[in-house]
Image 1: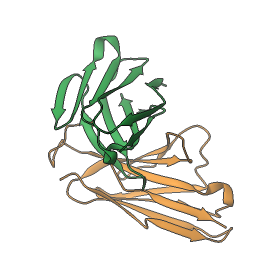
Image 2: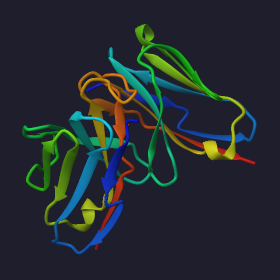
Image 3: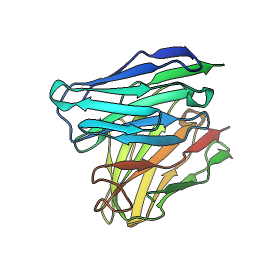
Image 4: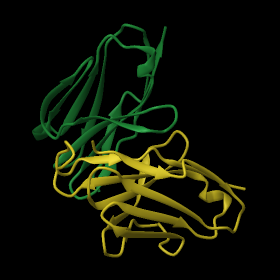
Length: 106
Length: 121
C-alpha cells in the first residue's frame, strides 16, 4: 500500500499564530484530501486537492503531486481549530496518514 | 450537498450480541462505500470496501464472518458486528464516494459519516 507520513505529530500554538502541516506520500495518487477530526470524531472535509493550490478562508492547501507531498496552511489560528488533521491519499482505496494533533491555546 | 449519515451514533451492548450500523448517503448516489475503524489516538484503518450489489472486499486481517457488510442500494450500506466482544469496541466510520461527481463533489472524493462509537461490555 501507499505510505503516508504527516508532520509534525503534535503542535501547540498560541491563538493567532500561523502553522504549516505536511503530508508526504510514497507513490503517485489520483486523490488527496485533508480532513479535520473534531473532538466528537466527525471528519470534516477541508480540501480535495490532488494537485495545485486551494484556499478557503484562513486555510489553504498546496499539493505538489510530482514530488509527492502536500501542505496545509492555517493562518491566524483559533481555539476552534484544535483537533486532529489527517491527510488521506488514494488510487483505488484511501490510505490515511498518522495525523497531526493541533492544540490552539488562548 | 454530499452528506453522509450514520446510525446509531453510539451503542453499548453486551458481549455476544450483534450490532448493526447503517451508513446512508443523503443527497447523492454512492456506488462505493468504505468502512473504517479507529482506535483511540490512532489513525483510521480501512476494514472493507463495499460496492452496490456485490460482495464487499475485506482488508487483510479483517474477519468477513464477523463484520458483515451489505450494500443493498446506492444510498445504504450496513455493517453488522456479529457476536461482539470487548475487543471490538471502537469508533466505526463509513465513507461514500459519489457515483459521478454529483452534489458538488469531484469524482474520487470521499465523504465521511459522523461515526459510531461501539462499546461492548
